[in-house]
Amino acid sequence: MKIKEKHKDLKKKVNVVEKERNLKRGPKSWYDLRTLKKLKLIMKDKLSKK
Image (cartoon, rainbow, N blue to C red):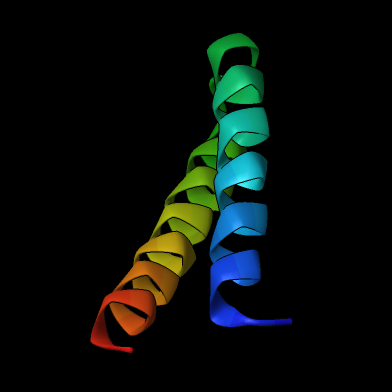
């Protein structure tokens, strides 16, 4: 996968997890959302450097 595709995929996953987070307010959903957002930002940085 290219960096742009990875970023787009992570963006979709973040949107799904954010919707889940509205219903489930547990520590695991918070942790999952936080990790996905961090990964998405890493991909965005790589994309902007390229």
